Length: 636
Image: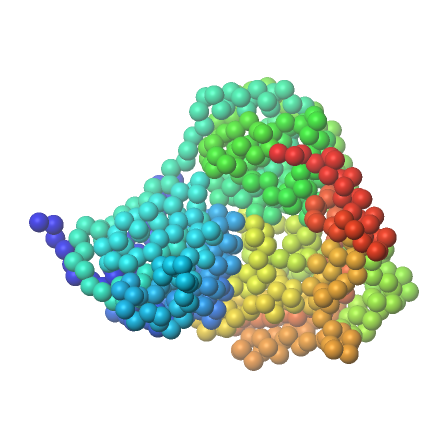
């Protein structure tokens, strides 16, 4: 008879997590670093008791908001290139519901995270228990069913022995690069404390091997043929290229065959910005250089990208009549996009294997140096814009009148444009510092203007663009990079949505630097409205009497225990960053910036819904422009 050990389901879960390892390129280490928790009646007496009794090597971190701590766990895994995870445990009901946005974030970005929400009673005898809703057509539905569409793997545990097969499947999903994402294992709260005689073999050391999938001869031959027939190919560096650690292979491939590189948000900082063949971000938030190269290319080589609408400029970035595609992706679904020649394999291995098939090939590009030089000149211009009460840069100002801009300058007591602030910050922080961002206008400015000098220092969550990720994500990145300065770049809108994990960072002694860009509103969406003929309804932070709100966000962080700085000039920003480097505690730098001073699109277009009928001529024109653009977009 097999040897057994009597444990509760919660104790068995913790013991199992302690013995899961991952092996990548021969390096073996623990896969689960720790567990975030917010305890409630659904998990405190089960998983909570197990962690108190024997957490093993797991770090136990108390979160402040379920979505926030899950975002921190996601950011940790993302910064660790998916080689390590944190688990997240919540109570049933609202605590579990708060995981939905975070699970969507992990799913959209292909990031593994283990979500462990409690569930209602398996026995159903006390039903309806606290935080349980009731549906007339089924007693089996709970809050956790909302997590099904945003989980890569989902299961509900109603018997202790079910835990074994469920966890094995969850870890198979999380350690598979092709389908990595959130695994949700819901455990009925009475079952968490129920005992069972588990076989001891279930708790033996288990290594999850992540082997690099190699391309087959047919895939390599087809891709090589497509490249050889092209004159002006273009490499798109996606997140998959970063997770595959493809930097050296990309550089060698690009330099050998004279092929320019462009980056998605997830792929940025795989190759440093200074590389002469790196033309920067592509698409809606891309550089003029990258978007020119995309239009001219007759072959697009997508390396680990899923071609979101921001990357493809809503499928208008490329000259589809003359351009074809080769996609290198570990995920077959993404490899099929753009009707491409597909290589379903590891990015690094594929690039190295293609060398043998391209001997003697060289592209016919003649404009790479010109495009890059021209863009650097534009970046320099954007770095030195200055405000005037009489005349501002019209291409930056957008639809704002000079009077409106002056009103903001007076109310916020600043003359600092956002592009100037972003590039000044880029200049003064350390080369190996990590920046984290997610939503609003900042991702556009960062993808265009931020120069990365060290690999894996640009951490953007733009697969889901989830407002509120920034500070929680910054904390997660700091857990992954404890010896580096980490900066969470956040707009005032996102800060208001969620900044609770700043408290967690301070509580647990992890120094996080928050850089808050305050333009008194949801500036990005205000731009979207006004660029398509509407006014700025519901996007500016104004009082009931119409006054612009000048909120002292620094006081909030100061009350939590952070060192704070208030900034409205470049000099003040530089001094604040330098002083913050010497601090041991978390910091917040509040920067008052003028609205409408972010970068604009460069040879790009974003397909958004525009009213087909309107009394406003400006909206009518916007609809006509959209209809015209759609004629050039690829339909599949």
